[in-house]
Image (cartoon, rainbow, N blue to C red; front, side, top):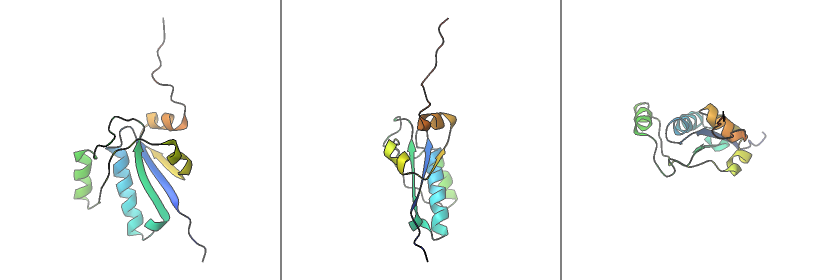
Length: 112
């Protein structure tokens, strides 16, 4: 039987305290329940630095607890190395997509 290679998935949102850590926790539970967690590197990160070092929002933690999904996370910003190693990258917003693809030019202003 061929050896399974490790795949990497990264969930990204603005602050890494709501959408992306929830997605990370749910995906991690799915692969754990299917006994394939050793084949996956699962992580999440932020496009901004606003929430670095903070735990997930209490509402997300409460939701995960109600559904029996373990969640242990500290917000961090996505380094470019993660993107190079990532097989799948999911974004929680259009802003995150623009940031990740390098097409984000920041706020646009028009002079009259």
